[in-house]
Length: 394
Ligand code: SR1
Ligand code: MG
Image 1 (tube, helix red, strand yellow):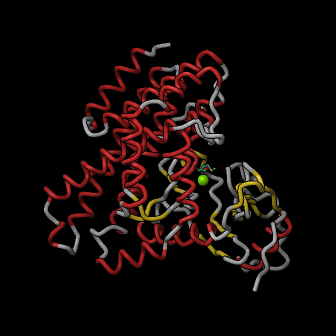
Image 2 (cartoon, helix red, strand yellow; image 1 turned 90 degrees about the vertical axis):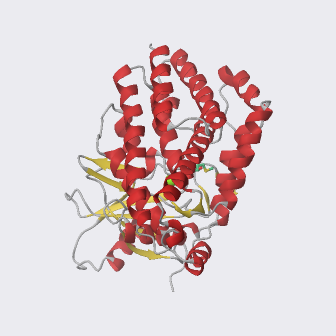
Image 3 (cartoon, rainbow, N blue to C red; image 1 turned 30 degrees about the vertical axis):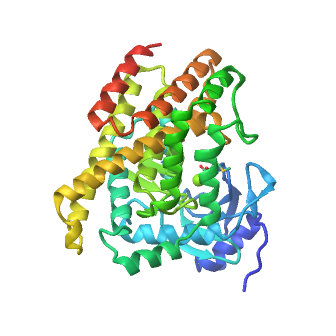
């Protein structure tokens, strides 16, 4: 039985040697490459070879905060199990788990060095035109297959218990729906937009909507979510896409995953001074939704439950998923602007005046999405964003 210890690169090499069953004579090198908020991540490979293995280890605390915020290491086991489950239904788009050791809180993952993080690609102005449609297929596959469209009552309740992730989902509940809507000490509010944040904190109509979204996040266990599907959890290359980092996953509303990724495309939209790039983000959102909708419709129709098979039922269901997605997108945009964890798209903007303008635009857009979620269909959202894009011409 392995004993938990915080890995250094030698430990990571030893773990790879043991679990990947490599020839003992093979020379391996390892380096820490993690830049995420929670874990440490090593790349282990043979010298001179571009591809090797990824070793991800959960620390007993949140890495970006430190030991003052302890966090269960069991998240590594939960993440491995979620990725394996999602990988059954979306093998093309889910990172492969090669091995995992619950005692060491370690996962061995395929090395995706030939892909790049989507957020970084967007920051560099690169456009991966296939990515939104691929992500729509991935989401539809993992959502429908873990939902009541595929599982009977016992099967879905069993899965809800197997993938229970209370500690990580409690963090999500706090950082999405609580902290950003009050003057919480964990928040990170730039002084220039303090007034805007205070207006949100005093906005009772907004808080009522957020309370509903929070309730649904906890109680509407529709499907096994990825749980943290921002553009940093998606790796892309020409014609290829892989989703990584599912440690915040668990059962929840389908619209949550969809909303988080839409929000991250919109955060990039808010950071852009280039009109063509803003237009690309609008088109990305449209392609994502159309792909998700079409694939859900196709997969859901094959349900063994005759009560759920009618196209009218499925279309109505997906319309409500869309409305949920807009609400969750609004929360993600707001929490990434004034909450504990921001995004590089806006935080790394060089011009302080433009950065403040982008933060303000993000807060207004986030609020609008939450307040208008039940009134905006996809075409209306596109029209609204196109108007905003023209008005914010810089
Ligand atoms: C305190 S944890 C903040 C965020 O980091 C992760 O990347 C998740 O997005 C989480 O919400
Ligand atoms: Mg993550």
